[in-house]
Amino acid sequence: MSVKIMLADDHIMVREGIKCLLECDRNVEVVAEADDGLECLKKLEFVNPDVLLLDLSMPHMNGLEVLKEIKKRKNTVKVLILTVHGEGEYFINAINNGADGYILKESDARELKNAIRIVLKGESYIQSSLLPILNSKISEENENSQEDRIKIESLTKREKEILIKIAEGMLNKEIAVYLNISERTVKNHISNIFRKINVSDRTQAAVFTIKNHIVKLF
Image 1 (cartoon, rainbow, N blue to C red):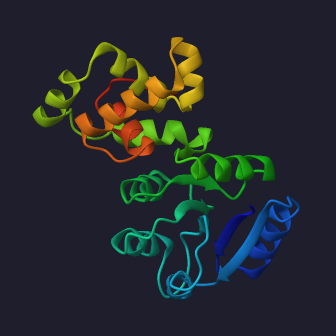
Image 2 (image 1 turned 180 degrees about the vertical axis):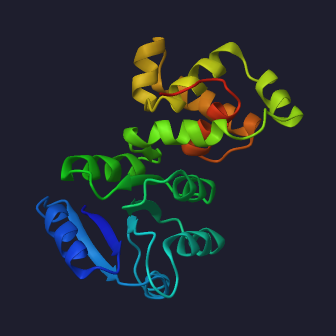
């Protein structure tokens, strides 16, 4: 079964280039395209892509507004932000509003395909070059709140170990190998971690980890 991709970008040459790169793989099919935010939302009512590659700068309705509306409608499509914007404000806003991944247009085809593969597995993808920006931006915020301290204290030593590895970008299989435990055990720990710190995905967990100085990424 092929992976169904939708492209939302107001530059037709960008869409054509990405489509060509992705469809070189017989297992990938671009099923829809949109050149503005409103068209993107309208087409999502009729097509069911596995992954939406969403630009942030689009007319009529920008990518962040589209992302918010997708989450509001409880659409299950995986949203991978593909943009030129590497600034912290764009990045943090996208993460906080539920983006499954964030990658820059300067990336090569291999990294884009890898990002798609990861978000399809239910993992979150953050381009490694953006991690210092994430760390710097969050470090500007106030010290962790009493509420967050209580959440941290509720975690076991093993859960903290796994939370740190999530923030460092490790996938479940890699964490399992690193800690010499089964992948199923890792998944169970992650479910408990998400519940205790009140997050819904790995990206939000990474933000929580950095914000509360559990780990510092450079």
